[in-house]
Image (cartoon, rainbow, N blue to C red; front, side, top):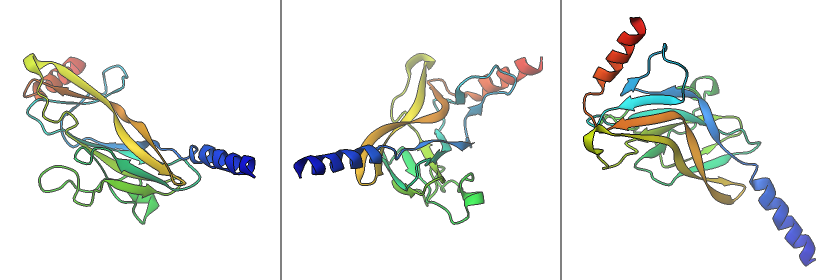
Amino acid sequence: MVVVLLGGIAAWQGVALIGRIETGPATYTPGGTGLPDCLPSSDDWALFGGDDDVVVAHTVRNPSPWSVTVISTDPDVYRFEPVGDDRRLDDTTFADRSADGGAPDVAQSSVVIPPGRSVAMWIVNPQGDVHLEHGGWQGYVGAPLRIRSLGVERDVNMPYQGTLWVSGREDIDRMGKAMQEACEG
């Protein structure tokens, strides 16, 4: 009897690990400097200057055969839009930013994502209060999250759409314009 019980628990834990999340297909970068299309393909997503509020979003998809709960381990930085009713529109669209320019007012610290659906994950100032001296760069590549699948919780690192760069320099727009001019020249 004990062996059957232990086997059942092990099977349940193994099946629960099938529940997962992955970076979804849509991205939104309302601020910062996007990289020009003429640059060679890379995993860079956006550049932000030291005087910018970093606010970006991308979708998080649940490829699992059952619902997965995604929980932010840092709700000041990572927040989720609720699952919308219209799958065709809501899985790849983003709500309007809040009045203060951050994540939308509807964003929450956790969300249940049904199988095969996506939600928007907003990323707001992942650098916190860190200010880089002498214009250095800091790259951010993923979000530390917690997921719950069939009652089993575990910590995961959700990769961003690409590297999110934050500079210690102000007025990063000059760099973006210079890159675009180099592409056109």
